[in-house]
Amino acid sequence: MAIDARDAFDPQLRGWGRYVRELVDALPERPGLEYRIIERARGRGPEVLFEQVELPRLLRREQADLVHAPNCFLPLARPCMGVVTIHDLAFEVFPDDFSKRTGWKYRTFARRAARSAQRVICVSGYTAADVVRRYGVDEARVRIVPNAPSLPIGNEPVPDDGPYLLAVGDLRPKKNLLRLVEAFSALRKEGLPHRLVLAGIDRGPEGDRLRAAADGAPVRLTGYLSDVRLDALMRGADALVHPSLYEGFGLVVVEAMARGVPVVLARATALPETGGEAAEYFDPHDVDDMAAAIRRVVGDRRRHAELARRGRERARRLSWATSAALTVAVYEEML
Image 1 (spheres, rainbow, N blue to C red):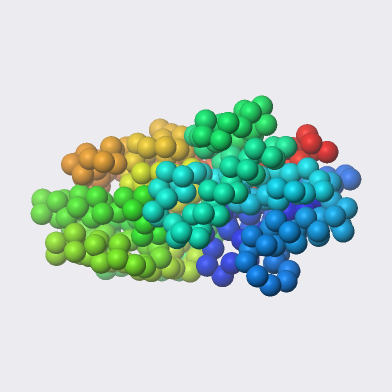
Image 2: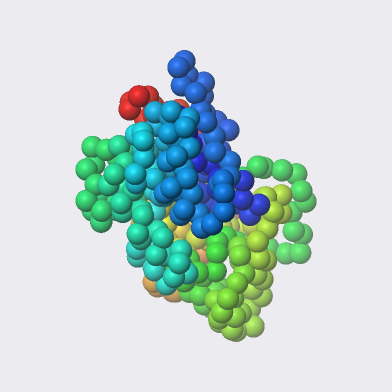
């Protein structure tokens, strides 16, 4: 069987790249099951040409029985059975967060891939329900396989220039960082001593809007960070705040939990499913509610310690060995 693992070799890994990297590394050996890992596209031209034309030819030459596309782009005309992983449908809900070309590609192929696949893997119950409802996929063909922490925990010194709150993610409107900056600015006026660090890809006008909304409050935008630097920044944070309006899982949530960092989450989409009882929640559209949730965590050391403990326990229940075993069970079910 073949796995399209190209995203795992991107020099700037994002969520789905981490997903396929960890999955491939954890795949268990099974009698009679041989994995063919596709690391890069062959030939030239747009990715869609490889995915929909060259990949089926490769599968035919290799006489593959099954192909797994870990990020929506399953070949629609293929010589074998297909599994597709769908992480979320943010491109349907927040089309303006994507370039025209990228949005078109997702909206064109994800629906068709989900409908043509013999099995659809989703990383949360929320995403599974979204796929069934929006795309009309038979829920009997859908399997839920959760993510697990993937960012290595290192020993790089943490920042020592005072307490800070951390948010991680691209600067896109769906991440809802503008409201977070407004809530943080209000807390600073109340006397909160923390800084706010926004870690992620700093691009376009969204960064300028965030700086303007800070109203003098200490907000730092880091841009993209290496795993080592992101790990250190996360370990040193007083809390992770994740105000996103839409998440299919929220991998950064369990990364923070694995480090004993309390998390303050939007009560939206898959985040309550991921955070469970190990997080403090707020209405992501209500700046005052967001500020109050942050205040409850950083202002109450007992609550802070309790969330740290619960988070570690929750993160320990997730592993890529388990996720890989569940994924291989899907392959074996079909083969």
